[in-house]
Image (cartoon, rainbow, N blue to C red; front, side, top):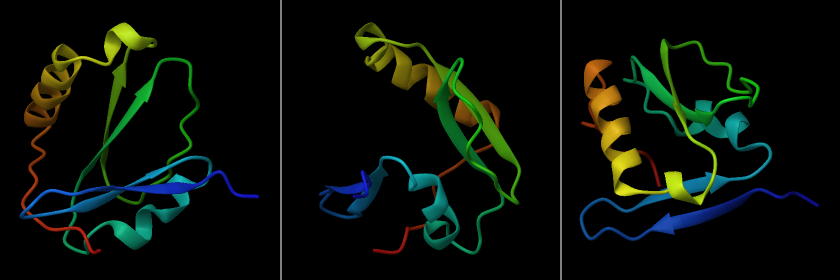
Length: 94
């Protein structure tokens, strides 16, 4: 039985899906817009690189544990995305 599941983020203007679980990385090619030129992969230290993309990828590591699930971590990620030249200007397919 697959451990892959989808969680819908119900934003009023641009709802989107988040895929979670073993095998989620295999879905990337089907959900990335064709106009994508770069992506970010958020992971933790010590985890293997399971995402193999044909696009340049910015690898961002976050800390392990509940204390890293914070607005400070989100801020750090946003700053890393900005330094990496990443912007969200497209809608993902539903």
